[in-house]
Image 1: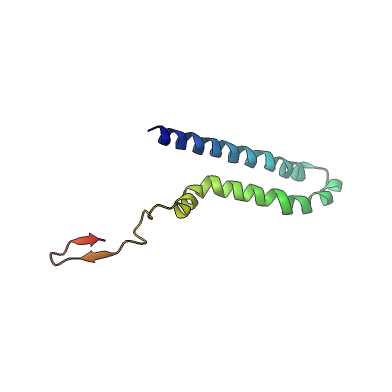
Image 2: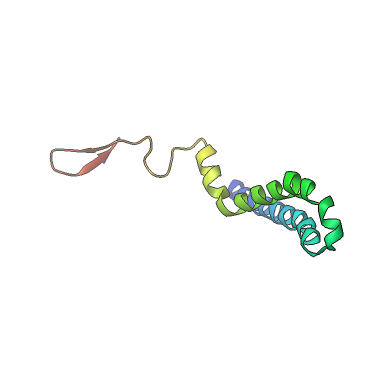
Length: 96
């Protein structure tokens, strides 16, 4: 039970870290949007190369990270990718 509690705490901490990365790296996007028109040409290379990819990756991780963790984990897949279903003589499905 202690290992499960530690796992929940680690997931909560990871979620907190990704949330704050997402928030902090989106602040320059607001500067890009609301800055005076004369200063906009300074922003695009940095925003496109650094901030947008980090925001996208952290957002995707917060949204679909559970699927990535499931695919990477060493456990067997949840929906029978490695399991074969066979029908026995009585018509019941047997999984092997």
